[in-house]
Length: 361
Ligand SMILES: Nc1ncnc2c1ncn2[C@@H]1O[C@H](COP(=O)(O)OP(=O)(O)OP(=O)(O)O)[C@@H](O)[C@H]1O
Ligand SMILES: [Mg+2]
Image (cartoon, rainbow, N blue to C red):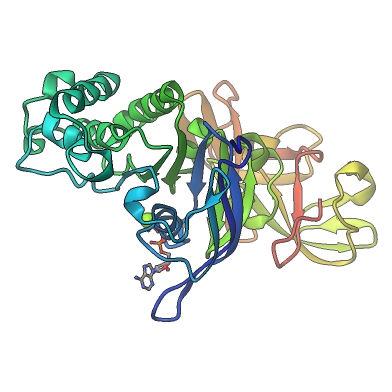
């Protein structure tokens, strides 16, 4: 048993028939029993990867290993996978029980009727749809249909569960509830799960780890906290975090980092955080809004142009080089729109990126 690399993808590529290279030499692994989120903007290749794992799409090159065995030439029905599609794909003429039981009535997972019903009922209890057994999908809410789709994916007791944006059809409150239920459920069943989402908060909240993609390339493969505190490049820093990170165009010269209206001495930075030498030139200085806050000795003098309340916190908005930037403060900070303030950067929490997006600090 290959616990650490229960799912392993090596140098996987997919070039579609029209010549579009959707996946470019992607390699990653998933630990047995982990829930891993595949995250990234629309079109980055998430569904393409799931479809290759499921065997619905042939890779152009590369390997897919389940428990150490290359499955590239294994038929989808023999891969021992449960797949929850984005659009549920329930059978409208069947009841909930019949839908959930379906995989146990055909093919390799076929079981005697009584046994099939017993297993189906077990997963219907786990997904809390026991009471809906005789309903047709048309009479169910989005959240209920979602549970039916999950129960149906689990009923064949697959080794790996694939879920493609399973919550995207649900309203915000239900998404929060069901994502927690999904995490609890897959942990209870102990199934290795790949969960696709484009929602960073969803990924941060339920993933044991996250793999962030852009344009068919892995940007970072890490735990949630590292995505936030130690983004590998500028794309990651911009993609993760709400409110979004503040970016300032800066020039490095004479041992200083100069923005249009503030400057920082390089000697004031934390020497240990440099990943490379900071040579003179143009860069982007990025800082999360909670690390740029009002203080008497702040580097930036500016006017707060707008204040937005977001529950326990407030966002103070200000203009810099014609762009809006944000400072995130506690609800009690009494600053109002129109006030002049000084804002201080937390120098051990700033990032410096090259124009190509590589992180230097
Ligand atoms: N059959 C196809 N032929 C050619 N290009 C395709 C095909 N299917 C997808 N693509 C392209 O491949 C890229 C990746 O598509 P994919 O569906 O994997 O993205 P995704 O990350 O799942 O996006 P979304 O979040 O919108 O679902 C996109 O640029 C898409 O346009
Ligand atoms: Mg998709």
